[in-house]
Length: 167
Ligand code: FES
Image (tube, rainbow, N blue to C red):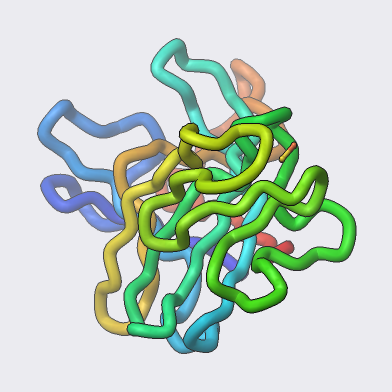
């Protein structure tokens, strides 16, 4: 599935890295109704950091029972591993909390705050989401293909799309 890339102030499908400071990067991640209320989906993305490095950017998007969408970097603040480690489950048994599959830390779904576990008092790193025309979009980061930077002499395609692979 391809992620669509757009900028609010720039041309549609602008090439990666062509933004100006006032541009807002917006990436379509998935259809809003592809996540059931009370469920979550993870995605393995890559982003460009403030220091222009290409880094893995695993995220989890939760659709709450109240139909809000919240998202976090899928990394536990305790040891940094993904929350659905092990059985692939994101939630506590009663589904009231996000839960780390490694040591069982519980996180408030709406805030990401750890309320129980070895990282109690710390929080999951939130990501900025917006639901636009029925699609969950990611804002505030610059994504890249996860197969590394293009070579210096590669012919860059101005309409390059980012490929999104749901976990
Ligand atoms: S790695 Fe998540 S609680 Fe330890």
